[in-house]
Length: 213
Image (cartoon, rainbow, N blue to C red; front, side, top):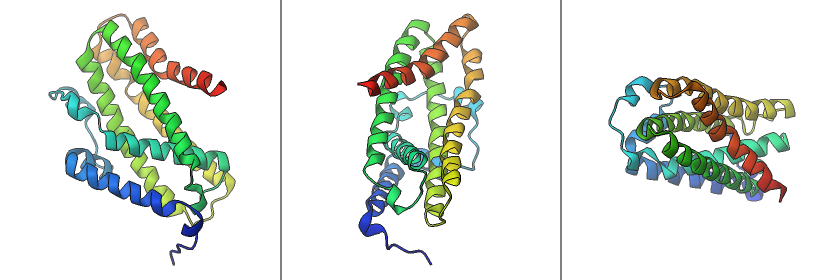
């Protein structure tokens, strides 16, 4: 029997309410994005998406971004506390979600500057959009997993493996799309490699330096 006895000592109820509101808003504002995220098992064809007309205003989803930030914060908290329970849904999630926002802001600034220098802006923006769609699917999967496992009493190793699975999946998504960089950009491969390093590793370094202060 599912129990809610820990709701009085945690923010699980508030977390679920926020997620529900986000999905309702996404359903009305961008039903295609909502369908893609919720029905995550339906494969998205990356090659087909590359040749579709690109609509920059619809490529970025604030709702999807907030949702991914919350899941990132939750997975980070689960990994550090080695615990997954109703008590995991607490204020520290917001702190880690804020770190996610800082990372994303630094990444966007670096990518924006590099895209302007290298050209092929529409092609690169399409890659960013497709990659984000896959990240939203991945976040939804782990949102479901955490709710299913919340009262299973996972061991510390089990909770860490769960959080590491989320991280490894994100890294895998980035590696999956590396080949699209080389397909779209005709400049020297060394520049593409430098671009990828700057856009992926640079923000992590900036975030690390920020945390020191």
